[in-house]
Image (cartoon, rainbow, N blue to C red; front, side, top):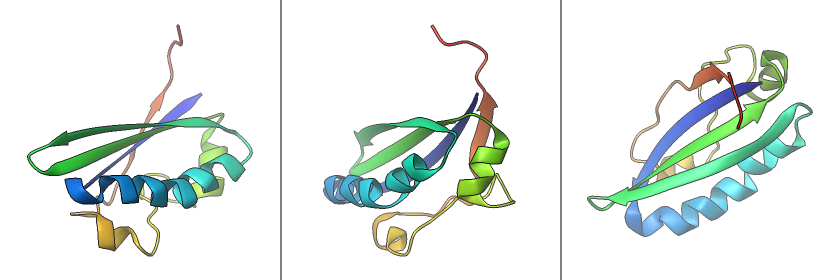
Amino acid sequence: MIARFWRGVTPAEKAEQYLEYLMETGLKDYRAIPGNRGVQVCRRTYEGKTEFLLISLWDSYEAIRAFAGDDLEKAVYYPEDEAFLLEMEPKVVHYEVAATL
């Protein structure tokens, strides 16, 4: 199993609206891809900003490719992300899941 980590930061006052937007876009698209095993949305607020960390789980790199395209490390963004995010990180990180307890 592969874990894909994506990070984004919004102004704190836009956090709830951005979470709703994530549910309608990326999270919905994750679930539609065969081989996706789910996603966890983590967030923390500090210094007037809210950081989101999405941890999506996948059966294989091939399954991730069906979502992200051939450049697996390139972050996937949606049209309105620019209205919410303070910066657009270009890359994501993947880890092989070594154990689940």
